[in-house]
Length: 465
Image (cartoon, rainbow, N blue to C red; front, side, top):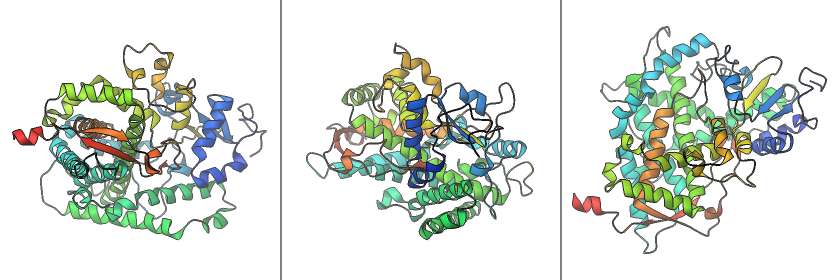
């Protein structure tokens, strides 16, 4: 593990290695690696056998089958947890992974999203009505933790789609216990991987992992199994996840029951944490960039006379909305440590979401939301680097959930700007800077307060009805 290995020509020489532990453990590794990329360029070595890349072209070389098989997933990061069945995330064997994808693909197509649109619309309507009630209580608009309410709506959507019924967050105005333990489960998983980096110290470091974090990870798994079994026992026809996944008790042509349990646990995380984080980040930036927010509001409000006109299909045709979301996926990527791969002679190589934005926006002093770079008329040189933004990944192991995620992002954001004017609030939680949050596999979201003000004609649709 010395600097005389096969990667000795790849700098920097003052690598993180020994300093890897503290920022990793504390949730700030992404900022340390970003600093290395700013100082040394697009390819840096963060440990004797680990490379971090911020090159746009590396997406194809690392993750796709173009020119040869994609690099294999890292066993250290993505290996199966002892005692638990395989999920789509830790099916490292290419044939097994292909079986998972084939069985699950029907639930994640554009066609399946269209079938699920009534479910999606119902929850987003309840979300908007709940915020309207809150905002209407104060003459000048209430102060609302928008992150909390985004968690509610996305969690209810995932519950209804994945387990046959919502978690009831919007109705109760409270987090469902399972939802509240998701981040703790991810943090525990991150710590488990970190211990593998230092096998001789793992027993000692393991003593410092809070028992509550590990317990919540176990509870998360048990609740996933319980919820999925309940849905499997329901004899109903509805366009949700379980009705579209191909099942096979033998695990040959579809997913076995244990594999469905494991995958359900994964989907709760990927379906809620990531979408909520991107929405939270976009709103955090937009409130502070009046010109971008005004352009988005103008486009949405001039296109749709009624909120009910906002179908998922119609929202695809709004160029500025699409530009805001594409930029949000870049700047507010929820998974700052992207998928690790293991090409010899390295143990790990990965694209870094945070570092990719450094390369994409190198002329900018601080991360900033610039939707215009995604518009055809944008002449900036930054536009030429848009291929660097691959939030859903590329290749055979790219994220299967792109269609439903994009549908939720478009609908929630469009409905919010149609119904409300947003004002920046001068509170501690209102001053949150998005990029100043810790990350343990995903962003550790903090509360963010805004002042939503209902438009005077915001109730016109219901009055007409």
